Amino acid sequence: MIQKSTLLFALCMVLFSCSSESTDNTNEPTNDSTLLKKTIETDSDGEKLTTNYTYDGNKLTNVIYDDGSKNTYTYENDKLIREDQFLEGELAAYITLEYNADKKVASFTEFWLEPSGIEGLVYKHVLTYNNDNTITNKVYRGDINSQTDLSVTQTITLDGKNITEIKDDNAGEYKLLYSYDNSNGIFKNIHAIEVLNLLSQNEFGAYINGNSNNVTSFIESSTSPNEFNKETFEYTYNNSGYPIAAKSYFDGELDGSIEYFYE
Image (cartoon, rainbow, N blue to C red; front, top):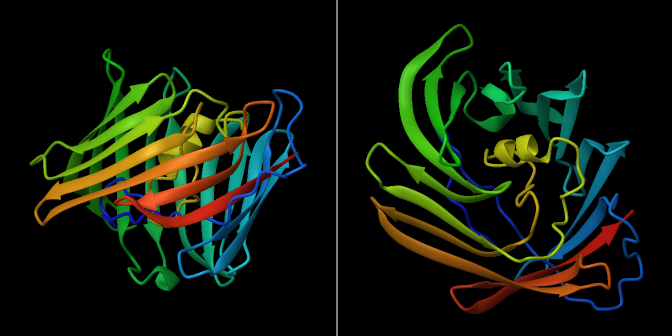
């Protein structure tokens, strides 16, 4: 499974785990309105996790895990305006979003509550869209009343809708690199997928990564401490070009697998 460092003041990745490969998944998509319905994951220790996705049309409304955690999404005039993140039935954190005149996310703010273990912390992400397919993300730390302490500045690099790099600009100490296949991404038809992809970079965010395609490699590196981790993925596709199974490898060793089910 992908092991991602937790940087509470920055965009960071959540745990990704996988389950056993299968090539006989009969719940295959038949058109380009396909939506991911369920995943069944198994980690390297054989532990399974089932995740269910529910929708209103093609708007994602809930991501529900059988370990008791859940993410819910609220929309207003087709804009995603809030994500709530629950652990064992308790609200652990929530995110609110604001948009600019171009209908792009101008900022989003994370509020951390008691079940998260960092109660009272608030992080505001202010986004600037550049002409070179990058987004500048300035993250300010504070409390519920004010967020003015600049914690980190990051550059998010895009290739089309896919995020290919997230780099810490303050010291160049932390970087995430992604590569993708050329096939249909499991999340590609979800409404506001590019917004959900941004939110998935938070610790308790649902793992919604890869807007148009599927991640084939993930590299996480830092210079302080000196770390380098690489995760790669091998997919099995159906006749419609969507993954129905995947295997993951951590530093070259088989780490897990996952099955995908669609509606």
